[in-house]
Amino acid sequence: MKSVEEIKRLASKVPFFVNPSVSFLSEGYGNYNYLVQDEGRKYVLRIKKSKETQFKDSLEKEYSFLKYFESQGIKFCPKVFFYDDVDNFLIEEFLEGKEVSQKDFTKSQIDLFARQLHALFRLDVKKFSSFCSENGYKKFGYVNPVDNLKKYGFGRFEEAKKSGLNDAYCYWIESRLNKNLCYLEAQEEDGEVGFAWGDIQSRVIITDDGVMLFYDFEHAVITKSFGLAYIKIHGKFSDQQFDCLVERCAFRFNRTINELLDEIETEERIIRTNDVVWAAMKWAKTKDEKFKNLMLERIKLVED
Image (cartoon, rainbow, N blue to C red; front, side, top):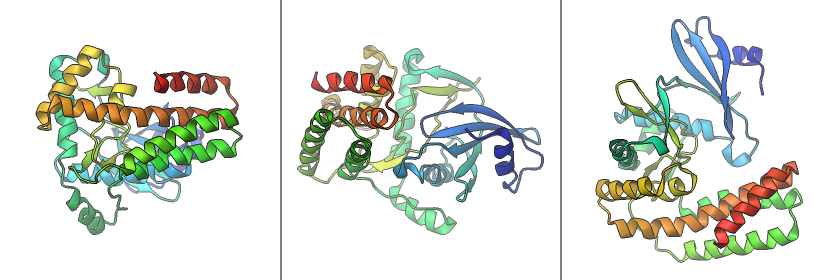
């Protein structure tokens, strides 16, 4: 973790800061987050932590996507103000409010959650490219499911093998990844494409007046899926709440419930296999037994 003095040095590169003060805020898998206070305003400085090459430009992606969302009138995501491509850090709005877990959502909040997922997905994808060109932002295009599997499945698997993953687990993972690849390659390339949150957080920020705010968009993506399978696996909704979410998404996205359930089942197999690969990669790299145990738990989930 970088020292507060190092972060102050980075903050001094931001042209609109006058006399910033810095304190540690939080950390996730990919980034460290620092609270910056300057001239009575609060900001978050996000700086890259993960060394995985596929996430090197994830903060730049967050910057491009959030700039576009703001330009399209989206009010429930943080504003971004500055990106530094030398030290790979981002300055964005500090969101005031209370963190609320999905398990504590009311029915109206579940509907609002679905409505906001829909609002993001339906933004004009074609305009995004020209928006980035006009403003000098890095472009990010449609990510098809096969490329996504190569990134989050095969790419991490190669890292795990290089770090000495046990051959027996290599065989299990490789066979599952190949099955998933064969399935995806056999699918037709059609259907609506839109913006998805990506790494959908199981907690949101609720303001005093009831506004629901989404955050952490470094894995936002242009895709066909708006994330129900990911929410089922990594979210905190109860079964009853998740059923309600599926029903509200079916209404918002003009889909049938059965269509969404079929989509969830297909994507769940792929996501759960990729989750095994991530744990295997972490175990191979760190030799930490907690990642081995996590890998074994996730293998059982796939087989079940």
